[in-house]
Image (cartoon, rainbow, N blue to C red; front, side, top):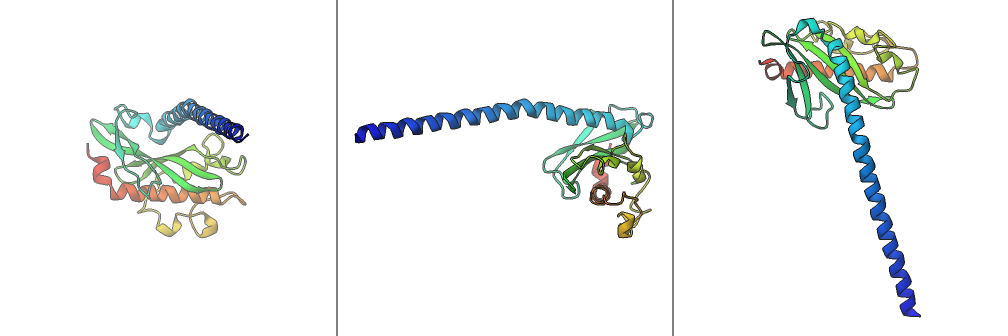
Length: 207
């Protein structure tokens, strides 16, 4: 009787181990299957927005391939190394495109691309991905609103630190009533990106 009981326990334990291994394998396979399409989707979005951030007639190099890798920085919000795209004219860096991550969106992270020229002015900003509430968060997308163009030609010299905020908070930027968390996050991350560019200008713009 006791041996039979032990046998049942062993059989049950073996079944649980096999089930756990099968579940772990399935999750690993699912991750590998979905990771590639997600990464490709992000890369495709970046390629689409690169020429919107910096017009193609301003540079003559291969923007997608001319990059430098930068380490994680609290000013950019990146948790791993990312590529900074460098636009060149006659082999001189005239502008860079930096990816930023705003961690404090209403529904999570908001990733943007910020184009900055040698004079530390913003050439353009585009949102790559976000999970904001449909309707309330739509206006940060260029195909649904022109709001994101408010950053064009802004700089640390032209806009004081206190003015990098929505008008409700005493800043220079418009917002939609009832939806201030989303623009606050984008404005803050864009401002911090300018700070990063200023602090790392030599590295970013050296040909």
